[in-house]
Length: 141
Image 1 (cartoon, one colour):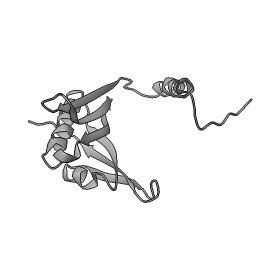
Image 2 (image 1 turned 120 degrees about the vertical axis):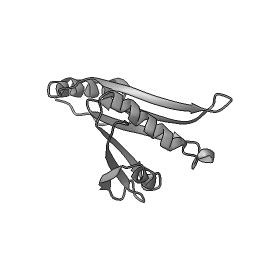
Image 3 (image 1 turned 60 degrees about the horizontal axis):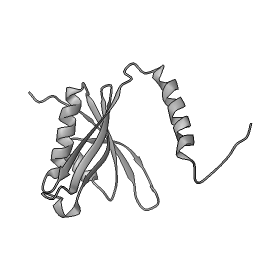
Image 4 (image 1 turned 90 degrees about the vertical axis):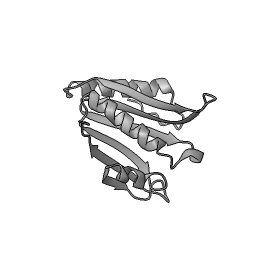
C-alpha cells in the first residue's frame, strides 16, 4: 500500500473518493434522489445580483449558498429567495431545512426567518464562528 499526500489533488481523484462514498451510502439510505435547485435574480442588464443554490434529499432541503449584492441588501431579496426555495422544497416533500453561515455573515437573518441554531464551530477559521441551523418547514395553506 502506498499513501500519497498532496496539497493539489486532481479533481478526478477527488471524484473517485466521492463516487465510491456515495455508492456505499446509497445502500443505507431510503430516498436516494438528490435534486438540485437554484434561483437567480438578474438586473435589467441581465447581470446576476443575487441567488440561492440548494439540494433536496428525501425530506431535507440543504441550502448551499445564498448571496445578494451588497448594494441591494435590506430590500427583502434574500428573504424572498429563501422562502421561494423552501416552498419548492415542500412541494418536493421536504419537512426540514439545513444551512450554515459564518458569524460575520447572516446569523441574525436566518434566526429572523425561523431557523434554529443547532451547532457552532468556534474559532473558525481563526477569528470567526461557523453556525449551523435547521428549520422545520411548514406548508402554506
